[in-house]
Length: 69
Image (cartoon, rainbow, N blue to C red; front, side, top):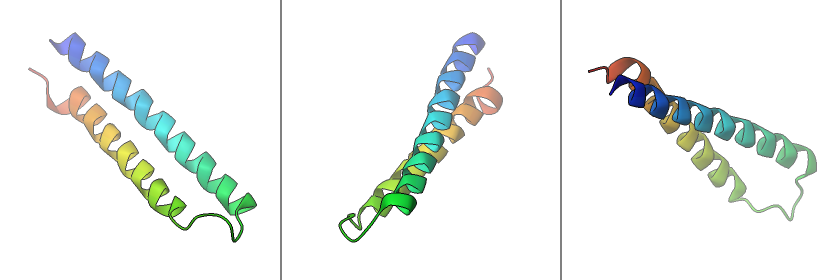
C-alpha cells in the first residue's frame, strides 16, 4: 500500500512540476508578445493553471507524508 502511495505521489509531483513550468512559460510569452488583441481572460486561465498545480502539489505532499498506513 505504501508503494502505491509513493507512485501516486510521484505522478502528482511530476504533474505539478509540469504545470508550474507551462504556467510560467505561458506567462512570460504573454508578457513579451501580448498586445491589444490578447484576450483578457488569459489571466483567468493562468490563475486556474496555477491553482491546479498547487492542488497537485498538495496531493503529492499528502501521498508522501500524510497518508502513510
